[in-house]
Length: 221
Image 1: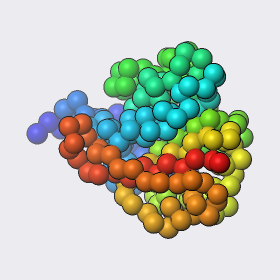
Image 2 (image 1 turned 60 degrees about the horizontal axis):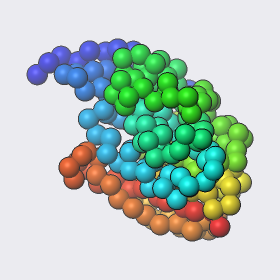
Image 3 (image 1 turned 180 degrees about the horizontal axis):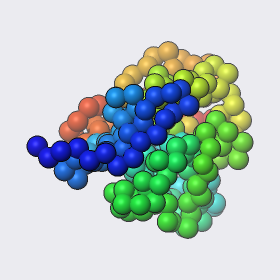
């Protein structure tokens, strides 16, 4: 087995170590020793964008907010599904992740930051919501509603946070949330916040392989 090549380190606001590393061509990002993302498994990240963008792709000038850049696969899929008139704002708080995508890791998803429709917002996605209204908001933040990387991310998925997201959406706009697994309590909160909500699942890897991840889809009436 080839050795791990540690490419960058940072500390999260919660004091956890964030580590970007590569082994045998596979890129990974760890937080506190737990793997947050890997370039090996991104099928469900692409599905998140495809499911959210399909209903709004026919709008004249759709605006989309992607919360969490990762290795760029969700952003890439959104750009692929949207017209030339679209604007896609990607919110990414961690400079380590931004610089990785501007560098060699950017080639993993075809350098979506270089697309003229992309606008980078280097802030917490909670703050980026103020740039709305958006026709779709895609959240791939932490492991979903459990939010293990930053405790403050839990506010996005709370009973008070979901109405804020709703106010940042246009009528008929779509909220899509990636989650490592099912969460009945979160689905109930979506409905209590007035969304028309349902759940889809997608495999983490191509070819129907890998873990089955959950995608919450919620439409603003």
